Length: 262
Image 1: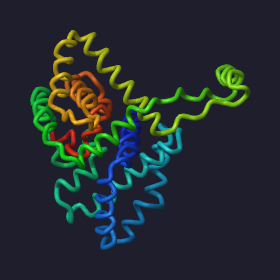
Image 2 (image 1 turned 45 degrees about the horizontal axis):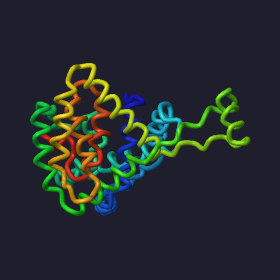
Image 3 (image 1 turned 135 degrees about the vertical axis):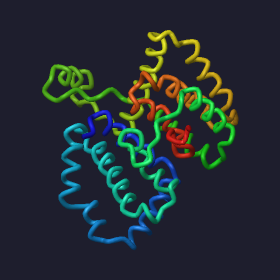
């Protein structure tokens, strides 16, 4: 039932989660819980028909094998977390379920509060970021700021021939999954700016961005700019697709999930 944009977000969340040291600790804890679970159920979510069915659904939307694998891995982690949900705290489960939380809400989901409320909570959160969180925010921000290389032309097209001629016969290198995520992030931010202009909200949009940048730690951790981007995404959340809002907020999601802004 999920479409391309949703699976792209799920894959992106998984790819970026690998930049966080806390992800490993969370999943080590999940592995421990699964070791005491019904192994036939664990196997059902790691191999067999269910996995093949999910993999097929994802591959229809994500032709890149690495991105498709990241999306499948994310879905499997969530399924396994649901299996042992009763042994987790609400916050622990929410951390595993986060990639799907806003696009496939779990029981108990509450609609987000007014935009002003979300931005105010984000501002309150920014000065409280500890060193471990700064490190993870910086790692994700670096991945998102890396320049995405242009996509390789499709083989057999005039574009492919031109690229091969320009490079002395060698075809352009394919875009890596992390580079594609950076590309999606840049596109989401451009959409936010364009929508702010077209909706007549430019001044307020820039105001939210500036306030977040002022509230963020100015200690060389490199998170000031991404704080402004996250605030801009929240400010435009009623016009942007939710997948783009989540991606713009993603550097901070490991420390303070978007769904916590309530």
